[in-house]
Amino acid sequence: MTMRTQADICLVLEGTYPYVTGGVSSWTHQLINSLSEFSFALAVILPTRKDKGEPRYPLPPNIVEMRELFLLDYEMPVEKPGSYSSREFQPIADYHHSAGTKNKTRHMAEIYQRFFSSPRACRKSRAMLNTRNAWELLTELYRDRAGDDSFLDYFWSTRFIHMPLFQVMAGELPRARVYHTLSTGYAGFWASLGAMRHHSPLLLTEHGIYTRERRIEISRADWIYQNREFDAHVRESQSRFKDMWNTMFSMLSRITYETAARIITLYSGNQEYQIADGADPEKMQIIPNGVDVEHYKPLYRQRLEQEKDRPFTIGFMGRVVSIKDVKTFIRMCRIVADAVPELRVLLMGPTDEEPEYYQECLTLTRTLGLDGVIQFTGKVAVHEYYPKIDVLVLTSISEAQPLVVMEANCLGIPCVTTDVGACREQLYGRTQSDKLLGQSGIVAGVTQAGELAEAVITLSRSATLRRRMGLAGMRRVEKYYNKSNLDERYRRLYAYYLENQQAPPSSQGKHIEDVVPDGPPLLSATVSRLLR
Image (cartoon, rainbow, N blue to C red):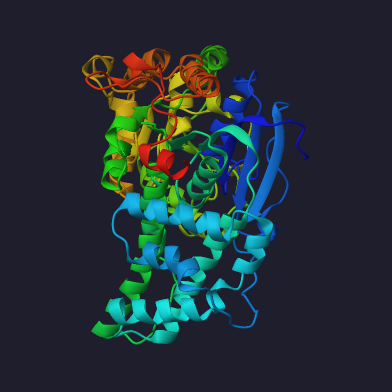
């Protein structure tokens, strides 16, 4: 896709839309379609070109440009060792020695301007890691921070951390009047650089908390340096190299928070993590996910009619991937099947994202004797399958604000979920008035197949309880999660930043939305100073 005009908004995405299905991708597609009066560019980060595949969504006509950045398709520098002058290299040394987000953000902006802001500078910067300056800084940091560890492992860990960052810094973003990143991490870093370079405001919407998800991933990683001797020193060393990766991702989040004009998330629990990671509370705002209530209303009556002539049916709607903990769902089904005669289970969702995990789930299903109970449907048209189920179960170990819970509640389907993300708010209510609507499901512990099964069995034994919880869910979605109302908040947010070229008046002593609807200053004070 080639550029026709400067986009109103550039959405910066990492590993999601339009190549991967799921919550964030679905949200992105719906947002672009709903706000058709704005033009969008896409800046998409993928691991490698091999991971690209075919788009899973038809691109709406208001997308005027798409660029891709392949994070791991870099070549290790082979140029002969050279050197920079002390003055040229100083921002890099200052970045590594400085403390505090504001200082690091300032030094990162200087590094970008000096080494990556033009094609000529980028070509020269590919050799940066081979310079005498880089070697001297590396050995100094090694002595100060990891002197008891293997220097070779420290050397390669440092290189593997820096090379993807260089890819991002060298990648050219589409020109846009507003940048909007849907995560921190590499996408947030890329968007921050675009905001700095083009003097544009940056908005951040976090569905899940990037640093938290990366910490979980890194804690399980076998691709980070691992010494197979299990003595105390080695365990400490392994922890240090994982800490290097965690520190890097944490700093990318802090830079994004510092650069962003507005920090949006889906529910209040996320804000606690954001503040802990350095976000400014004055920039923060909650805009929950929404669902098209009118689209699902006709399916409610259809579901009630089908309910009379089928066995009790559990539904799982989601990708068959490890973070959804499908194995716990299958173990739960074994317990429920022993208590509920003629149980039927529909496990609905794509199976091709983690093929090995999918095969393991099939093996577990056979081992537990559930071949005749669980049906793996693959990707389905949700409007055809939601009417077929009595209870929706979500067993994820990490979620933000799962769309499937809202969709199910739209049809009066009660849900059983793990206690992750906004699930407790979605099923029990967030505010006092919300809680008065009643429960629309049951929350259980993460990985707790027994607790999940107990909740499902309770619902299986009482159609009255299912009906009462289903009606509470319908009322809650209608009042608090109606997509048309939430789209309007993004419409106002975009319109403000597109129309206003100067920062709004001071909000001191007032709630920010009393001063500017859905909009704080265009850029944080630190970044504004960098651009003068």
